[in-house]
Image (cartoon, rainbow, N blue to C red):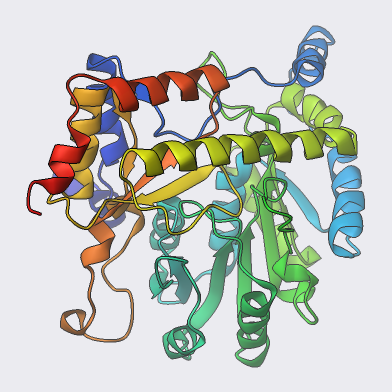
Length: 412
């Protein structure tokens, strides 16, 4: 009966992360794979959600106060004038906001440019809309943008460019010069941009998040998507489902389309969590600075740890809560094989990097492009408690079963 499935559905397969998660559970491994915190969300936000539930805010609901406050935030952060009544759509998390944005602007055959490596959800949403993903490879190890590669990817069918900064999985924060290049192409080639800015408050080493919409001529052609989850540690609750409050900010005609699509798919973001979201967004500046400082310390800890057990760390994350670590050159294992070794022998699970890379990286023939580096990276999530990170360090450094250095030297 599989022939009854749509052609798009047939292209989707279970994530290798799921398979590895099952293996990790059997081995009782420490989870540094999935990007959700294992420490509590802030008490004042949880209390706000409980209060909303007890006040019977449990039906379909639109909390306009979220839009009003978001308008103030983007004005303060990026200098953007946004009408909270027409330019903001509340969705069920950033994932739905992104999907609705794609469905709102992409027709069958439209090309959408993405920067590789990239978060896998983007490609799936574009495919479901009938669009064609076109990947532009960022150059390792610092994941720099080659303007010539980007220019060559643009055709008469290009409808939009997707930008995630700070980026998952690399932790890259696109520079102002790189953003200007992207903005310039959008303006001259009349392209739209969809941005994923969920890590906007998690940047390190005095890096500052700059929204693409803040560049001249870009507010009218940019759809900003973001959410509550990464900044306020509410990606996952004990129920297994996150709070799912996100938003899209765009010109009114696009936001109207996104809102209409959202209503057809999910109707409403969870009402009590919208109320809690408003409390979260009103958090004082000290909260955001503390968040950044805590994650920077965790970043430094895991960089030192992984470098100490043999990983090549040529690029320290500038933002987000992921580290994309390179397997040493003299190690014969692929990323997938290495992760299985980590789980079975060290009791630590991470994500093979290959799932973030794609084959059609440029307009060149595949034989002319060296793709070998795509199987040399592993993503570690450091959005974990200090106790969890310390336990992972203990396992990596002192596990009797793991022979990291012998693995590295096997072919040396």
